[in-house]
Image (cartoon, rainbow, N blue to C red; front, side, top):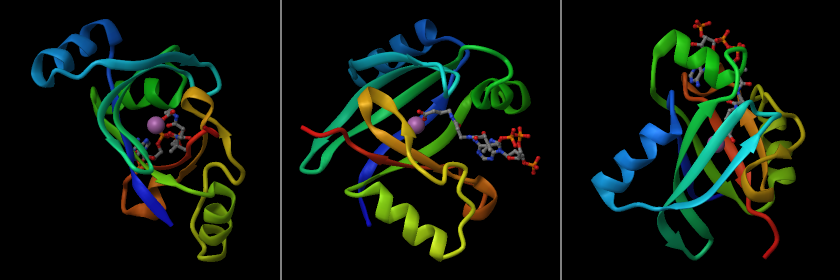
Amino acid sequence: MLTRIDHVGIAVASLEEAIPRYEAAFGLTVAHQETNEAQGVREAMLLVHKGDTGGSYVQLLEPIREDTPVGKFLAKKGPGIHHIAYGVGDIDSALAALTVAGFDLVNKTPVHGTAGSRIAFMHPKGVGGVLTELVEAPEG
Ligand code: CMX
Ligand code: CO
């Protein structure tokens, strides 16, 4: 079902502060930046590796408000790893299979993710405390 690690999501207080750290440490560059109102974040994707099935990224996440998943996480736990995201070829069949297997899905149907991708989250309680995202890359 899974085709790659698409990204590791990292909660940060400030993108302006966090991006130069990844540039300086690893020479990564920002491949994409956007605000996703529905997810409550400003995000920057830094490319780590280009693979056969799509890229692998570090996703830096700055909350746009306190009352958002990343805003609440920062307030409770401080900056750090927020979620892991796996690539899938067909997110609809992946979600159907996870539903049959009894997993608790935050998104029962896909929602809008980075750069037009389709994404869905599994609740961390059902995955050993790991907030888990599935990503179907956009066409082309
Ligand atoms: N990783 C692991 N556990 C987490 C977590 C995370 N990122 N966020 C919350 N939790 C845990 C909390 O520790 C808490 O556990 P306890 O009950 O043991 O204390 C529990 O989940 C509830 O935490 P909460 O702060 O009350 O948060 P909510 O219930 O309001 O929301 C969740 C939790 C997972 C439903 C919400 O964060 C969510 O919908 N996440 C998916 C969307 C998202 O994260 N969007 C931002 C990223 C967008 C992107 O990647 O593109
Ligand atoms: Co993500």
